[in-house]
Amino acid sequence: MDFHHALSNASECCSETSTNRHDKQQTETTIVNGEENNCFNGRTTDTLEKTKPNLSWGRGIKADWDRTVRTHWWKEMTNLEQKTIPVTIFMFFAAIAPAITFGAIYEKTTGHYIGAVEMLLATAWVGIAYSLVGGSAIMINGGTGPVLAFSAVLYKLSISMDVPFLTLSAWTGLWVMLFSVIAAFINLSKYILLATRFTDEIFSMLISVIFIINAVGSPFSPVGLYYYFDSEHTSHDANENDDGYSFLSVAFLSLVLAVGTTSFAVFLKAIKFARFFCNQWSRTTISDFAVPIAIFSFTAIDHLVFSSAKTETLNVPDTFAPTFACCDATCETYWPNDCTDLAEPFGRRPWLVDLSDLNGHLYIPFFAAIPAFLAFILVFLDNGITLHCISHPSHKLKHGDAYDLNTLIIGIMVGINAMFGMPWLVAATVRSLSHLHALAEKTQDGKFISVLETRLSNLAVHSLILGSIFCLPVLKLIPVPVLYGIFLYMGITSLTSNQFWGRFTMLFMQPSKFPSAAYTDHVSTTSMHKYTGIQLFLFASLYIIKSIKSIAIAFPIVIALCIPIRIYLLPRLFTQAELTLLDSGDENIEKWIEENVDNIDEELVEQGAKKEGSIISK
Image (cartoon, rainbow, N blue to C red):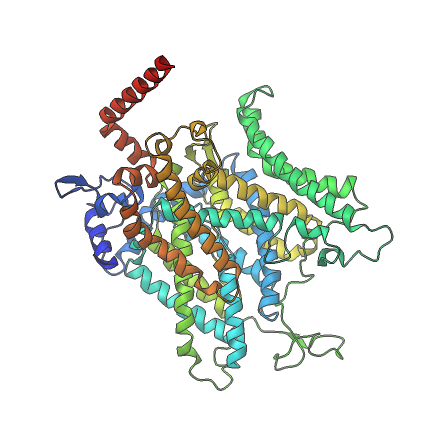
């Protein structure tokens, strides 16, 4: 059975009986070889139980719109609660810091054609537009490492072909938009719905670990706290000639600020379930404002207590204008690098990209479809898997999902950004999951109770980013080590809810000390570790490929391979019961336990008898 046959079976087996997919559906079961099995002979999970029907041309978009925006838009735009304010402050810093950082890296990798200003403007307008018409109130769009790596490859390609980078990028972006529109109209998101927790966990953990490593110290680029202890790091350049400046003092202070911000935020977040303060309202309020309090506290400590130590600040531009400064009217050379004799630049590049500026290579509009197809795979999978992670049943979201609508909207946004020489923005997984966790009400052990599904926080965050463009020097007051602390907090908190991370830590535990869970109680230790090992291999492969610029463009292909590996390889290595317990949501697991409760009770009795016999023999 090939992949398309599997997809066809999934669509037939898991299709809904009406277009109102927010109603609870029951997965259709079939009899295979005399046994009752779900789709894929037991390989499906709760994600496949909510798959979309095979809709005709464009109907999936309309169904998504009706189910999400049309049904819940007014409620999501008016449900202002206390939690919205601290979440907005937290996510503002969580969104603007990567935007500026990615902007600086874009400037280096694209020959100054795209920089911090373009990234901030793109982040602001895309965020505002998406918060108004996007298919998810929770999802945050922004710059990501894989898209950045693709842009770097595209820049090198433009140099080798002697074509203006922005022109090649614009044509490529327009092709990505076209592919996205087609994908949305033919309901291509059904491929994403073949992904299960197996793929979601790998992708989610990868993005979480990237945030943590970039905060601590990346082995592939001079970013993170570790590099403050290097006297040659660029963060020391501005102050190294000042009297009394000590790079070690700054490094240790930066470490204290980052770890302090993370620890203080975690401590305040936990106060909600503590015994301190006079009532539950005060504990909840402090918990809601945990991250903003931590940011402002350690920023104040840096400026008021250790004002003589010059920690690194955000490298933001002084004015709002395109990054590329021109030497002359042709705007083909960059000031001041290419014209050191000029005291002032001739001007800035125009915002709108000239699609006809092909340098005589008339085939470029057609050639651009080739790299665009790879870029489309990356954008499509990034958006789809992020929404898949957000929409997991354990998160208790009530307003439905909108894969086709998201594909359409984000594809159009990519095309618009490409036309104006701005970076392509896609779903930012860790920022989206951090937004989800910040809006959630949880039990003390971290399980979701409910989520405040509001568009207001998303809208307010990106409105603040838009406003900050016109007061860029104010952003320099934020110490970069404090933002590293926020990255560390985002990465750590998103890891704690990842089952893959939990099973990874069990590789170093005594089996008898494993925490009680369905997959530890009813799956053998060998099988559980084997399953974790497969995920770990794919995770490591993804991280290595993403980090090596020469092959980073293959990143989306490896993500896509996770789906057929789950469909075809894992059922040969594990039993149906093991896959149900390891790769399903809570509802499926509880159903399996209920159906097998008699067998489980017999096993427990046998284990108790063996244990009693062992004690008597001793």
